[in-house]
Image (cartoon, rainbow, N blue to C red; front, side, top):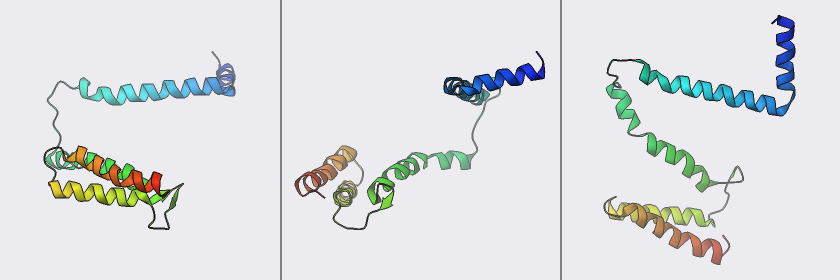
Length: 128
């Protein structure tokens, strides 16, 4: 296969949106398989350094904060400009319940129920 025919094949592949999509999916799959197989290639026991293990303890909290906090303080990509937002009061009520229970027992379920019990009447009833 010559370089010219290779370029023509590449251009034909990328000309249609389906070809570009299939190529992207294939390359992403290849990158995923290669990056995840590094752990299986080595025969030696593999352990994380202590600092990495300690840092991974905070990863779920950081990920949850990265998802929840923008939902609380933003609407349509802009910061909220009023305190009449039911999400704020629901979040405060849920956090108050969680800290009151000190995180023990069914604190997570209670946090959700308490937060929604404040959020829904304000959002549906008052239209906040």
